[in-house]
Image 1 (cartoon, one colour):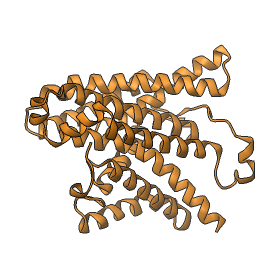
Image 2 (cartoon, one colour; image 1 turned 60 degrees about the vertical axis):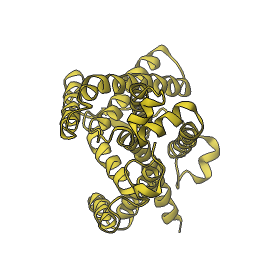
Image 3 (tube, one colour; image 1 turned 90 degrees about the horizontal axis):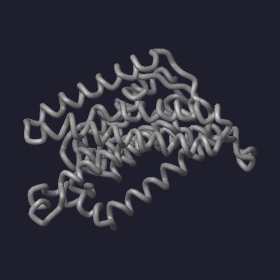
Length: 300
């Protein structure tokens, strides 16, 4: 039973990270029906930014918690700026173009950002400092769940609650929902659609960067390719739950995380991707719109 709980919490941690990234995919798709394949690279840039900031702050002699908070904040701001700029340069000029054009542009941005970081940094894995300390009260259960995993789960849960409240109750959140339903009508009632779309990219990029910082600190290493793998998994989670739906993205991410964790624990880590993608295919056969389905869920 203890082993089962360990796998369950491990899957919850994976799913939490996938959820942070999947929200960016699903929010952008919900607003402008674009699959932003460069979103995974924003996650990678967030991790690299945190590594650089953490290295500088360590030299300056700051403690672990201060480094974690400052590195996380700067990584979020820097990645949000990347997301904002990417939307301006690569997607906005193609907004009225056929849907294939921005899709190709997104793939191009993904490749560009990967190679940019490869040339600016290195192709090797770089060690990432363990910024999340081991808490004393976690010692009795440290063999089941680590302090880093607890921080990841609690941070993700807090972000989900805040994002849901933002979408439901704030003026801008309501504007995002209106834009996702009908952009022309949103313009007619005075909503600045361009501003809403930019904000969507900023929020999605910020969440991806936060996920990058947390998982890099937990795993302890990064390279230029981590965004591609995580991005594919998060996109799978978004499709699994019903792309365009915030609750669907979270549900899909958790199911994907648990599937990988139990497959690794009870079968073999070599087959975790096989189980995950087999589950995706199986569910989409019976639910092409995802588990929750577009018509039954709330879009951003």
